[in-house]
Length: 132
Image 1 (cartoon, helix red, strand yellow):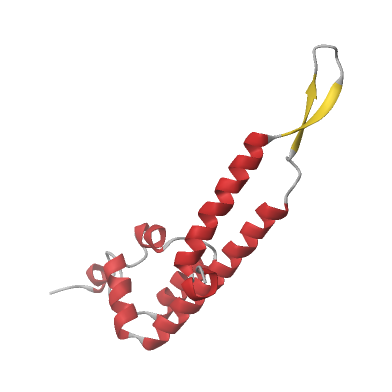
Image 2 (tube, rainbow, N blue to C red):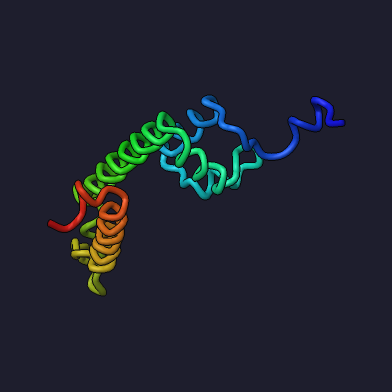
């Protein structure tokens, strides 16, 4: 016979609106479903997928959380685009003269970050951020 203590051990497997709300909140905050489900207090990914298949309310909340995360990700990308603080670096020549030089490495790195984020956004929200 199973005691109450035994039933509370392990990962949750039965749908709980509180756990579903926690999952969606963590998704909005930018955490991946893989990371959330790695938390021992959270259900396994297979359980979350089963909840998504069976529960329309959770499916809607989950989709909205993903959309909110994509929006936040897009704004972070814009912040990278608009940040010009490291475009130029100060260098000192052999004669001691200080000049400002365009930082090609930083520019290339920022371009790579933006490109990667655009690709991820296109997968996160293809209708909104995918290629036309």
